[in-house]
Length: 409
Image (tube, rainbow, N blue to C red; front, side, top):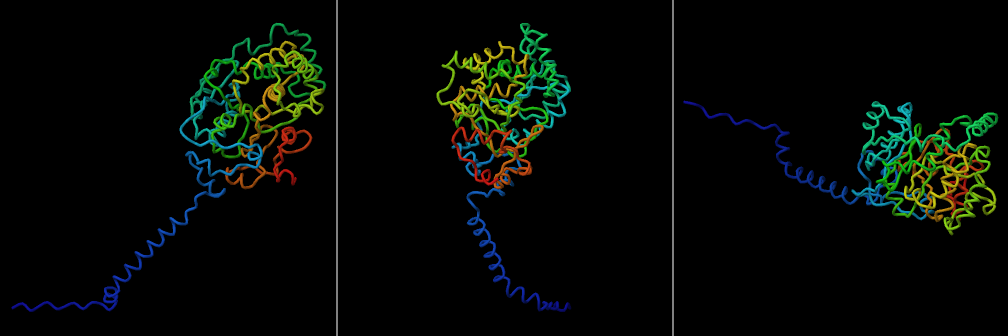
């Protein structure tokens, strides 16, 4: 006969757990509910500047309504466009040679990482010689849009046959004596003339309305979280710059006289609300040497294509100043923009951070540097320096106030 199994005794701790199991479960669920409600209610509607930086570490487009605008953008009365899926008819444009491959690769990486990985604009590379297979492979791999490679026509690049070679050679020798940069370089003069009057005529650019010029050896220090091309269109801008400096007077001794001749013959091309006061301190009698540093420019291709600018370039080109002196594309572009555009159509870009040998631009406002994840030392910024640099002059000519951080310097 089997005996009945013995009843197991529960430990005292187990009895306590069973006794309080339901109250403990209720308390735990209540705690979770409180945490969820607190999280939802506490979520801020607008991230702070340093929090925005965390959000843009991916390639996703940011809601531009949450961005803090630099003081200069507020002063210039502009807005940032909404980031949507639409794109402008625009491209990055680079004039380079095969030997520039690795210095340019770093520049391209900067622009892609800081801007284009979110927007995927095309990139047009131009060269007076065929690009190597390696150059094309590397650049195609680096850019997020379509990479296009163009050969510059010889009649756009080479010295025109109507230039007096002996006169031009004598001028170069004289500049060597004065130790002028690129004094004896014919290739540099070809480049300046090409950038002034021909790059926008290349067939690869025919389908675009806007461009951003990018050169080898540049750096971008900050994220750009809005579409700069859409920004230009929506704010009715036609020329944008980031640094403004003074030209070497020895390279352009007769440039302004040629400009004055053009203005006298073509008053119809001079805008009534121009920015003459930026490029002249005496109402046009002389040139004060200020110009936009054209290695960074975001601008309208249609402006260069206009009859006004074509007439301007043709007038300057016929004087031979690109070869008998050493006229640069920067003063040529700057003078044209200052004279032929409404002053409101020119824009100073801030909040980007930029370097081209040997000058730096770094945002002066800490909140902008944090938001845009800038990696530049504000102590290196030369944008607002007096004397050689002309950004203050630009704001003065437009009768715009300076940011308080600049006035405090």
